[in-house]
Image (cartoon, rainbow, N blue to C red; front, side):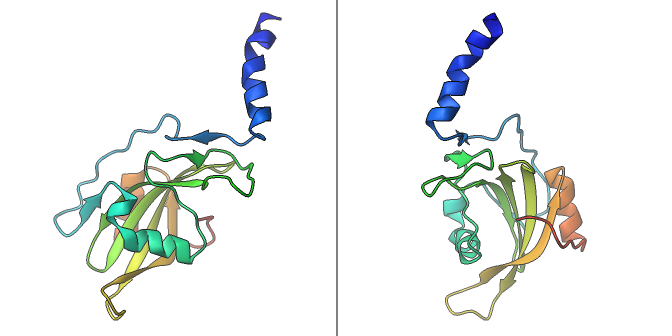
Length: 155
């Protein structure tokens, strides 16, 4: 009986927020540092790489800044925060690797590859290549940079 009473505040909190679980940091996540060489610049904030944010928006993929509120579960409402949170990027001249956390039933770290298009006016424009890997982010990053390609994963 004591456990049920202790859990009541948590239940009422979920009900008052419509079941939407919003957090600022993914649970139990420590980001490793990948050593990729001087040709890749590590970016810790999405606002430091507006071209990445622009490409996610172009694809209708809402993504929160690192440490900004995002949804940890699949429950959503019209005013819900994004279900993705930017974690880190490694930007190169022709390709960029982005790490983000996806909330929900199949949640976890996603590592995606963006390719650059030097021909666009105003500088390089990044495009999601469709390549996305799950798992340890450094290993996934190295795999994408080594040419491993994927299809069919959820962005």
